[in-house]
Image (cartoon, rainbow, N blue to C red; front, side, top):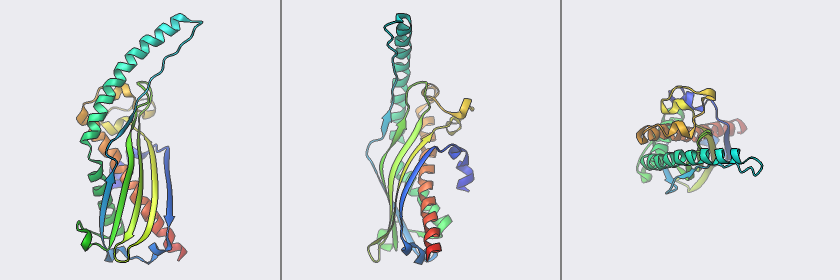
Length: 231
């Protein structure tokens, strides 16, 4: 169900790098019979990258003057966007989103039983979100949601680490994520983002964060299948 709910968001994933440690131990776990806790640790501050440029042409002072004027206007737009993004990211509970999304994945896809008490769990899926944020890239450029995380699966009974992967995602943000009409190439610019409220931006960021978390679950599922084929 999650795939259909958010399929439109991931139609243009350009960069999603995974480097995993596929342990053959995964093949010997029957997740239907196991209790799992999902815990996330998140970097305290989101990263926001906004920029704009000025064309300095000594042979064409008119072009230089126009560029400066245009860049001053862009600087104002970028400042508005950055302020809204910072507030929206503060309102977006990345830790809870990641934990909820992966808990749902584990239950619906792997069949494991989710428990909140670590002492009652057989396994722990720990997600360390090292960095996350937005690259606005200037008022005329597209916007990307970026997230870098390390996911580790522990057997709490033995203390062994049985799986680990690193995910780095740079996802172009499409207009429909924020409920906007499609634009050319379906890429959202800082100019259009500045027209949204902080609540609308926060809602779109939540959708993107949920899909990034779901991808971690998909990688775990894929590695389980690969481990079982090697057995």
